[in-house]
Length: 248
Image (cartoon, rainbow, N blue to C red; front, top):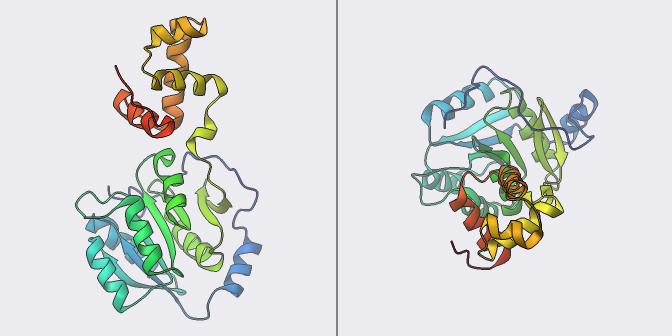
C-alpha cells in the first residue's frame, strides 16, 4: 500500500510506552556514535510511487545515501549481495514476492547480521510490530507515521542495533514489544480458552455462569486487541495459541 504521507504526514495511533524518545540531546549522541561514512540505505516496497518517494525524501539528508530502491524482494536480495547497506527499510507485506513478512526479515537477518532492518507497514501494529520484532527487525514504522521520522529511525537503529525502535506521535524511541496476548484480561483469556475447545458463546456463558452478552463482549474486545478481523482469524489464532483444533 502506498505511503499516504509522502510528502504529508500525521501522527500515528500508538501511545508512548517508553521514556526514551529521540530528543535533541540523544540525537546529538547518535550523530557522534554513528559511522563516519554516510549511512547506506536500501528501500523495498512493492509500490514504485512509495519507493521512489521515500528515496527522494531520504536523499535530502546529507548523512544518508540511498543505495537501493527496489520493488522486488528477489531483486533487493541480489543487490545487497553486490552492495551491502547499513540499514534496510522493507515493506512487511509483499504479496507478489516469494517471501515477505517474518520469512523475509529472517532471511535478511541471516544474510546481513549487521544490517539494521526497519519494517514499514500499512497493517495494524498489533498484527505486524511484534512479528517483526520476533523475526529480528530493529525497528517498526507505520505508513501513517510522519515522513520526517524515517531518517531518525534509520539513525537510531544503526547507532543502537541491540534495541527495538518505534515511532509514537512523531518521536522515535526504544521499546520492548509485547506479545498481543499480554493485552488480554484474565476473563478474555479464559473465554478464548473455552472457545478454543469448541464451545459456542452460549455454552461458554453456561459453563462460566455469565450472560451470553457478557461473553460476546469479552470475545469482541479480545479480537479487537489481537487485531483479528473475523471468526476465521480467531480460529487460526486459537489453534496456534492453545495447540487445539477449533470446531464449530
